[in-house]
Length: 560
Ligand code: ADP
Ligand code: MG
Image (cartoon, rainbow, N blue to C red; front, side):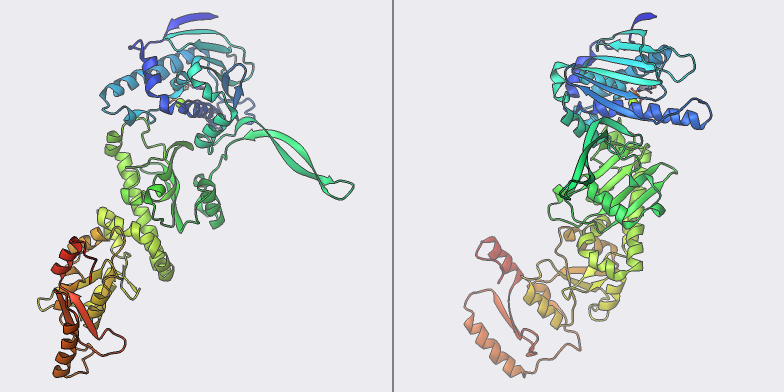
């Protein structure tokens, strides 16, 4: 058997172009070829379970082998294999049609980086690193002839008789000069760790030597012996593929440690599991919030059928949850399309909505089940919740019941509770509620005290999101205005009837005031004296807000 032919693609010289543009991401060739090998074994398993294959299934496995002298990488499997006709159909026609499609998309894309790395080049990606690719395969079908296909990356191919005697496929890559970095055990191990760590079929890569205990020597010291075994690089059933009921807290924590060895324990997690109207599994963890947000971003790993795809989950996960950690696995996320397309994809939108809802439900559940535990976590989760409250309408709808307001006494209230707490003391004559807040509790201490003295409560709003949060609250809450405590506001607050009265007579007040006013010679300050209650500041010296800002601007030292 011998056949020569021409692969049908329209653009003759696309190989060099694609090679050049994919260069930065060319390590994905291994991901693609290993996933094809895994697919081939999964198909075998399926055929067998459907009763369409009665032979010995054997232990399904994929092997990656490196020959440093020959400069070849071989990916072998004992999957379904192919006969010559199937090679022509699946490799020549289908696999290479992906290349034509790539060129079309490539022409449209404004930014080449938009599609590179997201485009599943499949089998074709082998030519990014190899100047010759060989397929040596034997189909599982009875009476099948082994077949061998070679192609040097031009559009010419050759099919001859193959040499495989057992079911399955070897893909042999003759690594090209520019890609010799891949002729390295360490490099391949690295790439396999990144993309293949959780594939569902054991992936063997070389051998490993372990020292195992072997009794004691004459002096009673423990003895060890070297045991050589297959180096299996993956975990075939990672936790997100299991049912939550099978798992304990330790399993989730252990998996978290595996993914992020240098991180503190997460606060809690959510196990995602849905099969309609789209398929999605995964585990999302709420991490302890660090100040260095950028460092914490892009920690969610996106998988498709246990193959690692990317750390970039923008659009799939709502923006306010981008700081979460963990894993999402969905075969329904299109991987080979540009960013703008992804945003418009209906599955991606549904997934985004689903994740938002799951997170909201989990937070609500913790809040209801254990308010104290929830409050303890508030300093970490508050940022996500407020971010979601301001940026996502659907989340807002739920979060309004568990977003917390914290006052200067470090007490936490829900929106409803807070309204109830302050209505009596903080409603003005027009029936408008006034919430006071401080964004610099220390600097504004005298104003805070002055407001508390008048019976007002003051909220602390000093997180990075609180600016937006305050304005969002003002929009959402009815008949409520939020005011930052500054000199002007503190001045104008109406004293609550039962606020502690001053023990001085009007005359005495004037006398004390005069003493202070004389002592302060700089312009712009105002002296107030309201109480001699030992817990509170008896006299406050304030600077008019306008003057204060002018001073700040003039860099004459901040505040008062
Ligand atoms: P995809 O995997 O998305 O179908 P690929 O370009 O990766 O596209 O592969 C094209 C086709 O070649 C596969 O669908 C499959 O039919 C066949 N194929 C590739 N690798 C193997 C393999 N190791 N064993 C059997 N068939 C294979
Ligand atoms: Mg493939």
